[in-house]
Image (cartoon, rainbow, N blue to C red):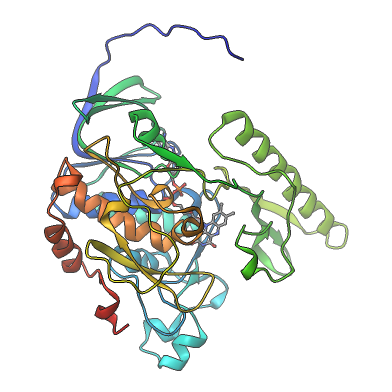
Length: 403
Ligand SMILES: Cc1cc2nc3c(=O)[nH]c(=O)nc-3n(C[C@H](O)[C@H](O)[C@H](O)COP(=O)(O)OP(=O)(O)OC[C@H]3O[C@@H](n4cnc5c(N)ncnc54)[C@H](O)[C@@H]3O)c2cc1C
């Protein structure tokens, strides 16, 4: 429809104020809020749903992909490791405890078993909530970042909507951890969308008497052909951009039908089969991102990056290590807006590497610390940011781990 309508302006109450407003409580938002609070900021974390973790809990993506390079070296540290440990503090799923990594295994053992794990989404979400509250983070659930007020190139307030109505939160700086760069788009920051869009995924949990509760992962991840095994399962030919409400609804409806049909098919041979948990947020991988000052690519690897905020491996492949630049977290238009998680600035081929949970934690930690330190990221002293990250246990450069 091309018809438009005028929405009358109105005065809004200021419901609260904070130093750092983290929008989105997925893994990136959790890491950002923790980091900002530990760096002395008054932090509010707002989340549209009523549980933390985003795709990592409500989206039922419960595999914490590797903190290592696949060749026996840990590369991601700091809050990425802290959240990894937290996710399995009360036990691992399916007995795959990463013993070699958590109990000083040999290099051979570490090469044989990557530093990854599967966790229980509910335990992880509630324990993350506990840790954030202990750090003094103010969590506001059921709250959507609906608009921003930008004055002289800075966001001065974020307009939110929740059960109490529409109100404004006054801010010094903002972390966009919405996964879809919603706050960037609302604020007029330059954004980009993924060229291919998303294939359909339909992950859900099902129960059978024999196997108990298990994660069923229908669909494949849309990795480059060089990684294909020939067993990829495409559920439909359609691709989804992920930033159109009608399209997302259709995608979710398709996923519902496919996972229900899967459970019912199993019931033909096992009458105890029943679906027990469906995702409550859409399973989208790469949608919209900020177009940042830097946009790193997946080639080359092992390159020294002067403004590195931490290292990451490639979950699909053994060997590659990347130092992520601070400049891929923010853009040139909105001075006090920084991104974390799956909406940072990277090329389409790098996006598949940076969208995963450990990387979201790495970028969240850096974004949160930076937001606590400054309301103008282009003029932030990167060396002081790096100093704080290192104090928190982050390793910035390949040379720091002997690579
Ligand atoms: C099918 C599938 C399989 C995957 N498999 C794996 C895997 O095995 N291992 C792995 O590590 N990664 C995997 N990933 C990727 C990974 O799960 C996610 O990319 C990662 O969890 C993203 O974290 P995030 O915090 O950046 O974003 P999200 O998890 O998307 O969190 C964003 C949060 O912001 C909230 N939000 C959004 N908009 C607003 C708004 N306007 N206002 C307020 N709140 C808002 C959302 O409710 C959500 O909680 C997979 C992804 C998919 C879809």
